[in-house]
Length: 468
Figure (cartoon, rainbow, N blue to C red):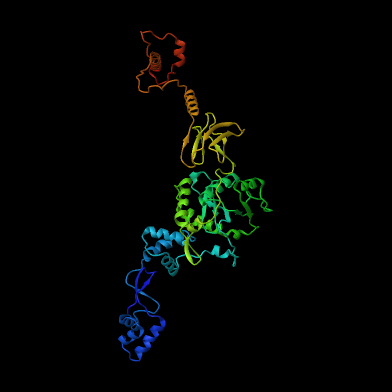
């Protein structure tokens, strides 16, 4: 019976092939006088297949397909992408070619990359060694959350975040679920706000938190908790573990999540025109649609990361975050506005160009704009971050309009630029004097001293000189 083998790499039904041993046997029997039909019956192969191998048309170990390689038309695109970024994840590139129309499976795709040798070698990374052996650490469900900051280079310049954006990643090593929150700073208030945001996305709080030696969590030299962060841990009712010095692999789950966040999301999915809010929403969608859909094997059964995470016994998150105070320096614009977290808030006029501070206590609905001396200029209700809202109080609008009108010296509407205004009598008289004409009414000029001072000296070739 003809056996048709489906080759994942080629994406279609492939013609049956002979192994090296079967090819040797077929040639040996053929030399002994066996017919092609007899050899085909003996090997259980099709006569056309045996004849092709005996004639040298086909080679053992190489399949012959009925259709062209479906990966071939995408090979050059993959080569270009790897030239642009030699560290691009294969799964990220697979998503790109799927969007372009590739209908093969992921194993077929990676096999095509390997067979063609499309991924270049990075000599710099080859010189940087990694540990050869790792210890296996048990992580009971609901026991631990691993935390780490990821520094993301080159955020869009119009964000105003400088050269680096910051992403706090929290990972549940038991199930593999992870979430992240973008922040413009790694200061402790932003750490607290991001911790609360990640726990909301994870669905609760584990019994312990693990950090490396962050200066906002502990004293890096000793690993002892900061008193300020100890209060944060008490608020969330968690115990805190600090990794030993130079033992970053102790929190390998979050380290791998950092790698996915940087390569799968930041590097490939955040365009230059995306706002921080849009980038955060894209990360949340990716974590749900892609991250939680990853497969794991537990008790010899396949299960998704999302299903494992849903079964973790997590404690409820406090209703309000720890009341840390965020304070950022900003400059007042010419429109008496202060930009903060993707929104603009008004201040009284008279402070354009001055440095002020925006102060917000986590868990409250208000924010204050204060001077460098600590005077509160304005208090507003905080709008959702990166909503593009412009918040102006009526008092600030009225005061700004009054100041602008007063500065322009206008009590009412501006002048009519189209009304007729011919030269006045004074202007006409001055024009006549310039031309040397008599004033209106036939009067003559009698001030000879003024006339003599303004008269032009006669030259030797003038008519008056000729009459002299």
